Image 1 (cartoon, helix red, strand yellow):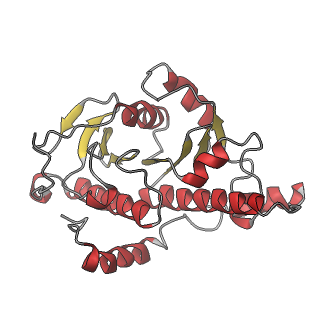
Image 2: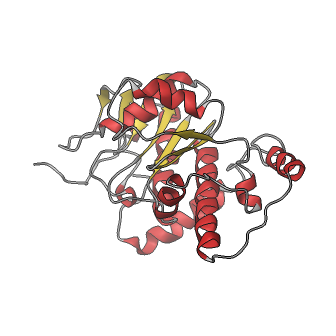
Length: 263
């Protein structure tokens, strides 16, 4: 079978807008890997193609996140049909369009959806208390996060309606006994939200493992702080940080042994 990862550049074959989306999405995959939020070759990050709202970009199922490049991303529609993919026997994961396609279809303002299975995220997803407002980072999600009960592997199209319902207007959701999900108006914002959600889960697991009495702010402080940390209240999230994240990737690529995400 053809499982080569030597993908030629398609920059000249797509619009400048699509190529930029491919660059940003490939960078997002690399950053999720760099910050320890991957699960072998599983999970997905999707992005809507500017000017083509019913078309999404998604990873080939079988590549490591650190292998993904701008030219290796697959173009699909919101129903999961492949519009274009590289010449390879790798395909896409059904769960990728069941979960992501549902959100993109129901929330046209959402440009990017990220789903992870991390150790801390899975741990918190199994707690009846859910995400606790134990730190400034986690208070960001107070009143601004959804919860979706586990229904088994996400391959049933009927689950789409319930996924969308449980996410509601939020940009973050804990998929119970499963993992984490974030979305955003930009790839940068969705990544920033996932980074903060993951950090919140890690902090909660560490705090609870210390087996000491925990303190949490009062409701008036929680509501005020959560509002202050919503995207757009003071500035859009992820945009200021993104150039620094790209510099981090460029430094990492010098010794990683993997192709540049820009290819």
